Length: 229
Image (cartoon, rainbow, N blue to C red; front, side, top):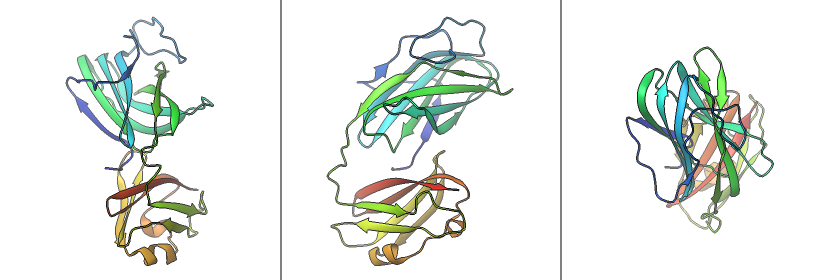
């Protein structure tokens, strides 16, 4: 748990109760909050749903047919409606019949957030889905484990520090994942060692990009985003 961007593809998908659901679409559209009746597009989207869970937001969608589909890029925005990519899911490619997809946002925005899909063909052409909205409450607001990253963004080749605040004694696990959910680095250290160490991105296998730094201690969890440039 705690990894950002976990996903699965199944032949048919069951939807979670309590989902926020769009109406059935005949296709992807160039974007916006409405639905458009485009025809003969490579991908027909059946539904796109978002539901707030404990510590994450679960996104599910399904297509009824695909042609030349390369991947889906999941985009998220806050109240300013400025969308940014938070992960990708590989498409089935070519299929006549339902394909169900799932993506989990393990570092959701607190409050109201908006999600959309950018469907990309193998030739680079793309279309946007319409937008779904979800409200996420911070269930971890009272957690005793918190930390800060400094500097953040951090320059490749320079060290960054972790400032930990915790009411619990014992070792701390550091887990670093990229936006596709792949674990780049994992290590368990003592609490004093964690805060006194200068962490070098290269030694942790981090190149330029955006990463999720997850600390776990005694059943508690805290996640921050680190930008390496």
